[in-house]
Length: 280
Length: 119
Figure 1 (cartoon, chains in turn green, cyan):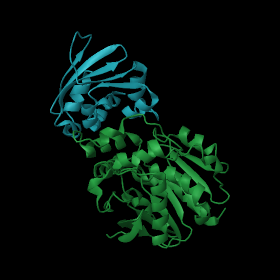
Figure 2 (cartoon, rainbow over the protein chains, first blue to last red):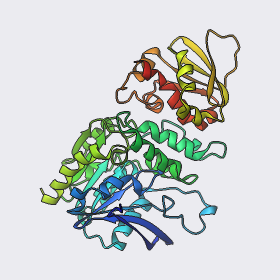
Figure 3 (cartoon, rainbow over the protein chains, first blue to last red):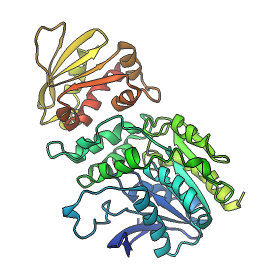
């Protein structure tokens, strides 16, 4: 059996450097651009890409950020520390959308992706049809030392996998949870922690989210109840400052809803996509 | 219950394999009660109950008994289901050599969740 999704590479310049960005896509219709979590890759959206109910109306695209999955780091990577920032992340997403010819896409992101959709809502609302933040919070303070995730005397794959494991719901299916862990175990050295620089240090957006105008671009926030990184309380605190933001707390799900328990996640996502499609 | 952790871990190769290179003693504190857990190539060779006098350990994991009780419920409630969930709440303390703790994080999470099988 061959799945309907296809994977290709797009060449583009990001922050003045040449990149070869891997993306997978399936379906036709409204573009739905999916953003993976810190230290992982687009495989997290495998079930969304494979859901005929979604792909009947949406062109679903999941790309691997540079340094992640099958998107290699740029030339000269060996001389630098990777660090994601609000600016580089935002411009990357808009560049990918432009390069792939996506007209007013819906952007759905999880965790760091759930954070950056808040900045997209502030900076690019008119260019986007809707935004979906999964495990979306305006800020998460550092409650552990992320330096251990990139340390020569700690196996990065094991440590990153160990961290990701606990962020999931104990109720999610074993096989999907362990696949999610595997994606984390495959990250390059310093990549997860480089993403966490945005998530836990630079990307604090608390003071700015009050200016989000959900009439320009609807904002949906879906959060799994077992997430303690971007917890339901964190999502609700952010939503309380954004008039019109629509919050759903997803029962029994954790920090990686689309990957750890695809069936349950899709049951929450489909009505949101229906609403976006209906333009309500 | 704590002492039975050894028996269940040692009988579960899917857990032991994640600790295959671990040869360490760590302190597990459940409220006022201290335990020294010794790991030998992923197998738990002993769990001793304190109090202890001048016994060394590589790292310590300390939490109140009420916290462990919630952590060990099956299924655990949101926010009580993972060691780092307790950490973010401020309900667990890690001391000592954090490098070793992080190197065996996945193993330790699986080991410390074992008592859920009793509930």
